[in-house]
Length: 322
Image (cartoon, rainbow, N blue to C red; front, side, top):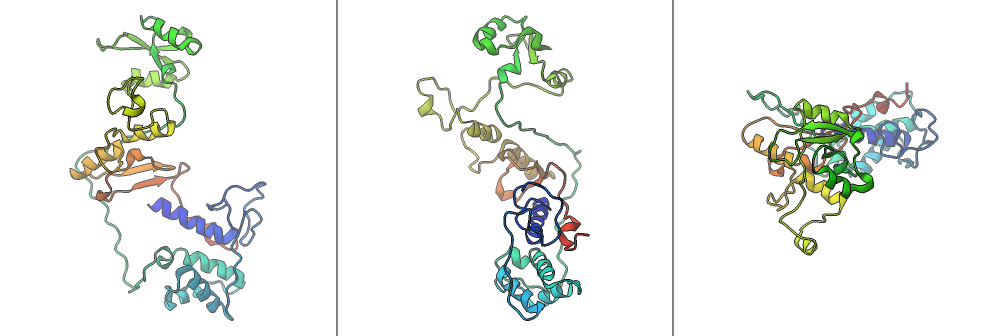
């Protein structure tokens, strides 16, 4: 995706400029203490750096040597000449080699293994999918990782007959009446007219009362009914693995009927796409299997960092750091 492409290029630029570090979108981890943004060629805040010195009597020969190493000799003389022509005449050879490595890292020869045939014609941009007549709609999923004590989020209210059983089973962990926010249930098939939400999360009560939220209780990942005596041999997955259950709740495919390990939202998008709707899938700081669709449809998940859309920073190109 575009965001991933930009962050990858930033990482290459940072590697050349300041070594393996986190600074400037680099691939490395943080190194302490942080002494401010280093100038080009300052590797003091890195855990390693590129120190290879290319052979050559002239800067053109040195750039050609670096290009041979990075692209296996597939970079044309015309492109090499353009790289050399971009150098600041007053810069040192060391700075020029840095710029050359940064520019080579953006070339198709660097990112592919096939021969590149440059014919000078402009590349046709990928067409934007046409808008459909249907209005824009979005599903936003917040996947809260970690342990979740659901019995202390939604519980029978103290006025419900089930509260005694709830209290006896939860013992020290029981939700006390003064820790409850009541919510009303209109479904006669439910055992309580009033349930409760933990007072520590009032937003859930607010969402429920406004009709913007609901609870789905007593659900889990089972392919068929099992007992305490046969669950270990009769289940297809690890019921007590937190990581496995986290993945299964995103797939919602206990019988693995799809065959592609697609996610529940990815399959929903697949259906809409086959019906002619324009659909996209975005992930914030990563992508979970919940949004993965059938790969035959060619739809990818665009990953956007939590801090915002990646932009190619000027300092990554500016070897003088001004």
